[in-house]
Length: 133
Image (spheres, rainbow, N blue to C red):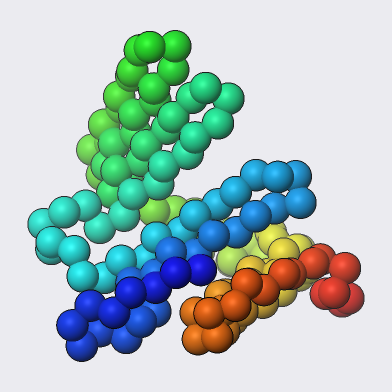
């Protein structure tokens, strides 16, 4: 994990978090709070299998594959909040959780340890086996 200090912002407001999974895939989360305000607030970049996919501020998605690109524009921004609330209501009604408790626990644990890693500047290994529910 790397972080930089920008002006009077806390270190964790400009951080790169690298997560390596047991299947050898890697996720890099860049949390950068000091950029130009008119620049896209959120970007998701996915690379794999000779393909690149770029989501830009939940307004467009571009797929690059086999030397070609295709782009789709969305007329409204959908970050999934409406569907999330619908799933929540359904979970309350049925008693069935849409996300496993173990997954929620791992996400929370990873978030807490990411901040700890930024503070200590140490890599931290997380295993699902450690999270006995």
